[in-house]
Structures are given as C-alpha cells and as structure tokens.
Image 1 (spheres, rainbow, N blue to C red):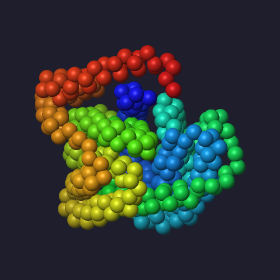
Image 2 (cartoon, one colour; image 1 turned 30 degrees about the vertical axis):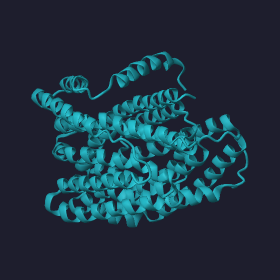
Image 3 (cartoon, rainbow, N blue to C red; image 1 turned 180 degrees about the vertical axis):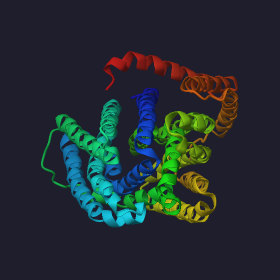
Length: 494
C-alpha cells in the first residue's frame, strides 16, 4: 500500500475511535449525574475507591498479555498461529484472572478496614472481585481486534458495552439497589461482553485447543510490563486512597468527580494508543523507519491540537459543569480541574513516546521511569494533602505527570527522534487562551449556554489556528478529504 494511503487509513481508524470517544464522553457525562445524584457524595466516594481498586488489580492479572498479543500477532497471516497465539493467551488469562479475583475476594475485609475504614464495605470489594476476572479477558479480546486493525468492530463492541452498562446502572439505581446494584451491573455487562467478543473471534479464525507454543515469548514480553502497570497506577490513582485516608470518603467523592471531568482533556489519547502501537509495530518491523517517525509526529501533533484547548475549556467550565451535572457538594472540586487537566496532557506525552520503548524491547526502562514518578507522587501526596487538601493531591499529580512525560520524551529520543511540532504547540496555546477568555466572558450557567459556549469555543479555536497558520494547506486538505471519505463509508464501515 502506498504511504499516502497508509496515512489516510491510519487517520480514518483514529477518526472512527475519536468519534466513538466523543460518544463515550457523552456516556460519561450521562453517567456522572446518575451516579453522583443517585449515590450521594459519600457512596460516590466509595464507588470511586472500588473503581480504583479494580484499576490496580485487573492490569496486574492481565500479565501484559494484551500488549504482547498486539506485538506478536500484528501482521501475522497464518491462521493456525493466530488461533494458537490467541487461545494460549486466553487460557493463561482465565487462570490468572481467577487467582487474582480470589485473592481480592478473600482479602476484602482487611482491605475494607484499610481503605473504607468500615468492614461492612467488604461486600463492595467481594462483588468487584468478579470484574477483576472479567476485565483482563475482555481486554485480550479487544487487543485481538487492535492487532489486526479491525477498528470499526473494536469501537462498535466497546460502545455497545458502555451503553449496556449505563442502562443497567440506571435500572439498578432506579430500583434502589444503590452501589451494590451499580457493581452488579458492571459484572453482568463485562460477562456478556466477554462472551460476545469471544464468539466474534471464534467466527473469524475458528477455535482449537491451545498448544502454548509461543507462550514463553508472551510471558517474557508481557510479565515485565506488569510491574509497570501497578507502578503507573500509583501515579494515576493512588491519590484517591490517600485522600480517603486523610480526609474521608466524602472528600474522595468530590475529588473523583472533578478528576473524571478533567480527564476528558486527554479524550483523544485512547484512540491514538489503540491505533498507533499496532501501526508503528508493523512499519518498524518492516524497517520503514521514516514512516514510523511520521506516525509518531502526527500522533503527537494532533493529540496536542485537541488536548490543549480541551484543558483550557474544561478549566473555565469546570464549576458550571459540576453545578449542572452533580449536586452542590461536588462543586468545590472545580478548583483542581486545571491541575489535573494539564497533568493528563503531560501524561499523554509519556503514553505516546513510550511506544518507542516497546518497539526496541527496553521494557525495564519503563519500570525506572514509572517508579521515579510514583515515588515522587507518593511523597508529594503525603506532604501536600494534610496541608492543602484535595488541591494538594491535584498538585502532586501535576508534578508527577510532568516529570514522567518530559523525562520519557527526552530518553526515547535516543532511539528515534520525531518532530515535536513546538511552534504548533505555541500556536495552540495562544489560540486556546483566546478561546478560554471568550468562554469566561460568557460565564455560562445553564446547560444550553454551556453547550453554546463549547461549540463557540471550538469554532474560535480552529478559526484562530487557521489564521495564524497552525495547520498547513496539505493538512487542511487531508481533513476535508478524510471527512468526505468517511461520509461515504459510514454505512459499510467495519
């Protein structure tokens, strides 16, 4: 395939997932008021702690096999090797999931005392143990679709799962089951999703008894990534535990709601990561170094192009959005949104550049980078939370993410340098500042005015970016052609 067509296909795949992520974001904005108003600030804090616990143990149980599957199966043509690779990994994943699920189940009472300060909360952790089994299995199935760049199917299945989960959560809350009902809804959705994705894969490649031929390669590649995921969790999620320890579940609920809102600044990161790694794995394996460099360059540039204005907009709109979507108890959390929003952008720098470390198989280097960031995050949280409250936790997150993102960019440039588009970044910052000023002057306090402000902000940002030549004519032409092409393909997109 010609390079131009390859880039266009890459852009189209990212476009599909960005479209899906916009829908996910809308789902999240629907879920936030349902949970905050349905559970209240204290139970929402407990829900956040359950989610954080799952987010720690599930990746550890996954053994890094999702990344390994993409690394070893991307570009593979032999169906027998594909079947054996997937089902061998699947069997190991089921065993690992059961082990970690049981560990969480039987340690639930001790964990409830430590985290919630109330042994009666152990029931939430016991129910969540099932998700620890189901999430890694579902993640492996999605990795299969990523490996073979079946992005349309990937996004469709993911959106259906999210929609079903929201529907079940709404039913659970309306029936008065509160947090127990919410967790059961998550378990049911994950179980159905895992079964459906497995059936889809079986239909595509067939089924066979795994021979475990290459399982050692998966273990050698994936297991060293497992500590990385646990250490990364310390930087990204352990602050909820510390806020709970120092300030209680109510403060955790306030902090978590604001954190969730600020995290939308990096909504394009997921689409990029989904498509970028299998794409550059293929080009790098085929010795197309310049092509690999270009994929990284444009991924970084377009992430910045959308993330920077998102951070500015969310920072200005944080208070009215929380007022509209939650209850008054959550509104004080708006003060942390600018800190977290900037932090997740810098974490995005790490997420993009770390793909280079995967390519050159220097995974131990990731452990060092993440360990430094995690240690810094813990130390800062211990110092700042008692003095500054949730603002201290947000400040710690910003500093830790900044160090991680900048260090990773600097180190990975030893292996492959790509254009960071610094002039464009400055133009994006300028355009975003003007956009944010306009939104601040409007001062939206209703849903209609907030939506109008967002749409107007988008128009102002891109108009300014165009006027100061932030995008080249070739890029504008690409986006126009890309939009036309997708309009033609929507009915048969796969």
